[in-house]
Image (tube, rainbow, N blue to C red):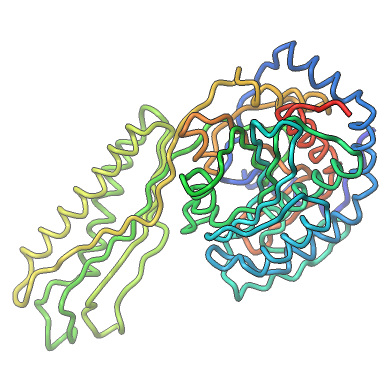
Length: 440
């Protein structure tokens, strides 16, 4: 029988439906229904009947209050990109206490815990990201209304971190051994200008080989993302001499050029994105100038472009640059005095796209685990840590943290424990199936 939803949660659900908003994390598409092959359904069903796995399931349920308390504790440690250290220190302590064989922090700040397998010929990773999108000064105090928890970052992805530790504890408590090594990871730099720096390092020549990757992200447990949504991000700055709005009138104005560039790009990109593979564009931030009566000496914008396919990213990238160049030339021709404007491009983000087949064993195992708990598994595309292994052809999947969440990346972000323990159990099933259950 389903638990009765709390009044405050029901109100949020109705509001989200009325406004057309989604309960999913916005970096993950809802996805489409997928078919689970019989062999993987049988594999997961057989694994779930194992006495040790059943013991792990019971332990996860028993730890529900502890998981809630630790969710609140971790959420209240600010962790914007490039400032994850304090949260990382606490997360590392939790992994050590949980019984990992070794715990360390790598040179970019990722926290890793190794649980050795019987054979150690392969390595399977279970990841949640440490960072949130919010600046360090954001009030991250967790507030409770009924059964719903409110705080910036509580769903994306602090609950994912709690799930990672909960799986490790359950394996230890139940004495489950795997054939492959398992890495439990709190990664840095998943959000914003972090540009996946943590997972990029993990799949570089400076880190040990990872053969399979499982990320736990914001969202319900029905999704298994096997496709990476690629993106390019730029900070573009127009520069000029600047001066008094009256006394230096006639100088080329960087702010005016910036406005023209946005206009030209928006028109060209709008036409381009109306057909073909889904592609998006956004000017997210602009700035510049010193006062209302000063010609700015610099004006900048930050642009995000995304596409399902790499070819469209290349094309919309060229539209951006041609629009900027058109605006630059136009406003330099308009100037009446002084030097010409210049423009600088700085790439501030690059996430590769890619797809893995839904028939891949890891993807099938994750979907079979979802189905085992009565959910209809969906595959989809996301912009997550999974982009990196997916782009390299390494088995990877991003699964939901469970419960119900909303307001991701907003100050009123919230999370409700709607049988969220099942998502942890599904993560454990997926992990053990992929790493291989070793005989006692």
